Amino acid sequence: MAVDDYVKFFGSRFAPGWEELRDQPVTAVARTAAMSAVSVGGVLRKLSGNEERAEMIIEGWPDEEISAVLGLERGDGEAMWDSFEPIMEHLGIHYSWEHEEAGAVRITFERGRT
Image 1 (tube, rainbow, N blue to C red):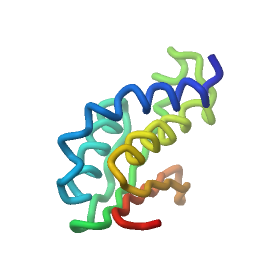
Image 2: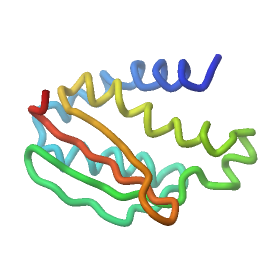
Image 3: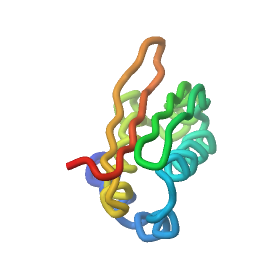
């Protein structure tokens, strides 16, 4: 299966498991996403926000050792960030990520954005 297809499938399968966060502040959703990233080798550098908007900065993903074991190229590992998109869509949260300096990724979560 192509990486993009797998990422969409993975995110869609896990989206219902996040349902308990639907009515929680967006910072709670971001905190859960941060724990997921940290559990696979990322390093949380920043987490801030409020009821409607949150932002986090993660470094260190994809971890070189994990990527080597899984046979992933850097771009394949970065596709992990796209796996959160169907989850956030399920919760009614706009989600985006972008590269920062020094290999970090800035991730933004916003409720009520159209």
